[in-house]
Image 1 (cartoon, rainbow, N blue to C red):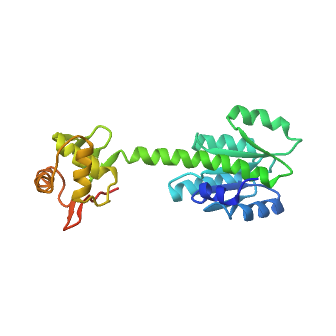
Image 2 (image 1 turned 45 degrees about the horizontal axis):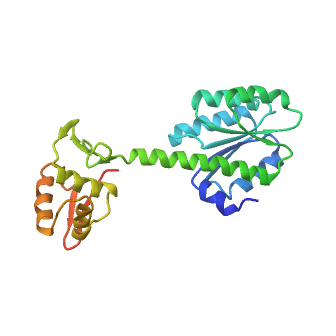
Length: 247
């Protein structure tokens, strides 16, 4: 059995759309899901689900993280709904609730790329296990995307430092940096917004096999400031230095 805390760790910031025409099952599942997910929406058929989904995308400027749908429903079944969702978001995570007598629907869903099925009647432990696996995948992919975004440090709308290439550009024009300036930029950009003391800076340079002292730090900062947007490199008297970034 999985621990509820483990699922919450991965699902607490995720959204889910539940599509189920059985009102009692829909109510019970929604109550359970609300204990784990930040945002839980419900629909009683595929047509309503598609309307809720498109409205959510328009209003939130993002997609539901997970769609959990029944197969056999009035107005629009789960296969038809999944096809429409993939037209909007080809990467949408869809989990399908499948009864034993609905095998005819499974092949079309498998051909669409659905890999996660939960059998009816629902074993709620199985449901939580599938949700945990899916939430872990989503959590990992969001972290990777966040790390990729953090390659770029925006010192203002036009001035960008690229941590990967160790390059500074302003309005798409490269700005020359010396070796010592690059080391300083790399340190402050490693955790933008964090204050680094003179001791931190000296230790960092020494770890890179370079010499540095407090007097030379002040000279270095003075030179770097001429290449950066005004107020993007902050000095906190008696404490240290940090970048003030847009994001």
